[in-house]
Amino acid sequence: EKAMSDQKLAWKEDGSQEEEVKRRFESLVHIGVDEKGKGRDRLKNELLALRRVLSFQSLGPPATNQNGDTTFRGQLWKLLLGVLYYDMDPAEDYLKEVRKGKSKLKCRNGNTAYSAIRDDSFRTMKGSKVFDITIEEPKLIRVLNAYVNKSSKPYSQGLNTILVPFLVCMNEMDAFHCFHHLLEEVTPTYWMAYERNGYGSRGYYLGARAACRLADKILVEVDPELHENLMDSEVVRKLPGNNQAEIFHQLYTFRHMHVFTLCARPLEEVIQLWDLYLALGIHMHVVAYVAQLMLIRHKLLHEDAEINKLLSQDSWPELNSRAVISLTTYLMAHLPENIVEELENHTTDRELCLKLVQWQPEEQQIFQNSRSRNHSRANVFGSRSRRARSADTLEPSRAPAGSVSLMVSPGLRTPRARSVIRNRAERRSSAVRQGCSVS
Image (tube, rainbow, N blue to C red):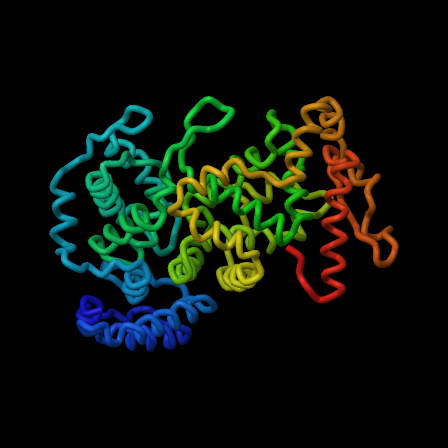
């Protein structure tokens, strides 16, 4: 608390929505806690109130930080992350790693970490209005190289992207410490390797792979129709392999989980989402991804929808942070406790992540068995249009009043599969009529 109150705050960002956050922040950093702990409860309450405010309003878009100072948003992020520099000299700690020079640690491809950093640095966030890589590249390289030197871990793709929000909002020293804390203390599982069961090979980015499965769980819970439609899309069925979810994750979901939404554009809107992530927990990015899918639900469920075009990197819809934050907080409040617990713990719990990467929905297991037995039949269906494939299912326009409408994929037309899905849908329909929820 003393370290934060001694910091000189720079109020450079404008916007009336910041006033409440600024007021609470200023009140928070001036709370004193004595040796007996007096004032600690007040401190916790004020911090909780600050996090609640940020859960429904961001600080607005960031301004271009031409001087490289730590802005108010940067000070706020440091507080939320707990990077307060107790018992350390932050400048000397950073300079010590910089003085070690170019990292010679080997990456998986045999190149040195410094060489891998240079291969990625020049193309980081090209075209962004608030981060000009032609000016900021030397700073980006120094911080990434210092992180590798301090952590003794090889550089991996995506770290350059994750560093950018910190460099937009902070000076180089603060960005280094917050970046290191996020990777090493807040999300350590995201950079772990693991043995892939059934594949005989090693997998990487364990936490991000587990986050893909959690996104599946959430979408099955809040919108099973959209989940089934995406898993049974034509582009997924055409590719070899029985695991629909893994194919879909590799094509679309993983890149969002790996860099905490930073593959979306524009960067100004993503940074406003990060206000929410750092206030309520970085795990919120998984729910935000589901929220983004649901915001384009009408396009994804259209009979002529081209899923690959809609969800590709180049065609991903421009981010609206206000809409995504609203839907994300709403979904989070309505998720079952077990999913919320898994969300909160998957960033640090390796064993939980190993269990999650093996999880798949019941319908997915049935589909895999059916697909392996009737692969030729699946190919026949794969050549048909969406309208033709759904012709023998119960369509909403033809369904009698009070009945449950189902869009059943070709691989799920076994009696057992139809029974599982129909029972679930009927329970949900009954719950809606009675005004309650069914997990």
